[in-house]
Length: 356
Image 1: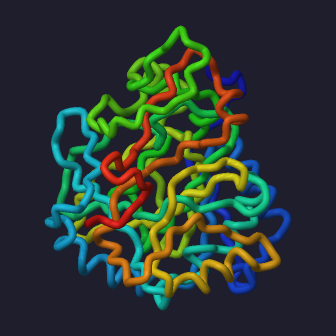
Image 2 (image 1 turned 30 degrees about the vertical axis):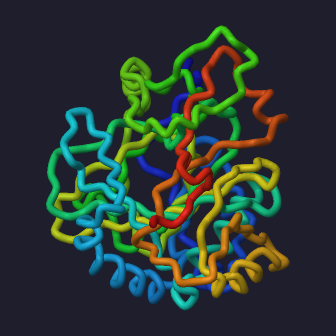
C-alpha cells in the first residue's frame, strides 16, 4: 500500500554544487543531508555542476560520433522492451576504457562518493559500467515501465546507479521517465516476471539466460500509483551526476531530436553485498582503479577483471547482473517470492566478459 504521506512529485531535487565543491570534491553537510533525504524519499537526486565540462564534452564528442555505427554492430544490445515491440532507439553504449579518458570525476566522482558511502556504507563497490544512448530520430516508441531488477530484493538501498548526462536533457531529446518515490513501497511482487512460490527456502537465482521473459512493473501497480504520484520527465543539465536507487520505477522514452542523448551508468553496491559481476578493464587502468580505492576520503572500489590488452568499449557484453551471493542477505529477503533470474553467460560461466 502507498504511504499515507503525500508529496507533489513534480520535479527531482537538484543540488547545484559550487565550483569549489566540484573542484575539491568536498561538499557541504547541507548538500549531503539534502541528497540523502532525497534518495530516501524520492529514490533520486541530481548533483548539478559535479563534472568538469571539458571532460563531459570530450566524452560526448567521441561517443556521439560512433553511436550510429555502433547501432549497426551485431554485438550491440538494444533496450527496446516496448509494449508493442517497436524499436525505441535505446541502446547500451558504455564509456571508453582508455585510461586517458577514464576521468576521476566520472568514474569515481567525489561528491557522489560522499553520498554513496553515506547510504551504502564505506567503500561502495562498482560491478557494472555501461551507458544508455537514445538515438535521434525516434518518435512515440517507449520502454515498459520497469526497475532495473529481475529478482527478489531487499526494501532498503542496496544498489545505486550514478548516471552522467553528456548533454542537456529534457523531453525534447528523450530524458528518462521517472516515478519518484516508487522505490519506497515496492517489492519483487510488483514485477511482471515475478512467480510466487510456496517454497520459502528458495534462494537460488535462475541462470538459464532466458532473457525474453515479461519484464516490467505490473499494470495494476502502475495505475494505482499514477492516481496519486504520476511520473515526470525531468530537465537535467550536462555535467550533472544523477544518483538513482535501482528499485525506482522508470522508462526510457524515444528521442525525437537529431542528436543522440548519451548517459553513462555506474552501479554501486555495499562492500558486503558480494555481487559476482566484474567490470572488464585493461591492465593499463589498474593504477587508476587502485588510486580511487586507496584515497582517504570516500574511496570507490571497482570489482574488476583486468586483461593484458586494450578493451574496446563498443564490444563489451551487456550483463546487468546486480544479484548478491551473500547468504545472510538472501536469507532475509521476503518469503513466498521466486528468486527470479539474472543475466549470466552460461557458455563461459563468466560475468561481464568482453564480447568475442
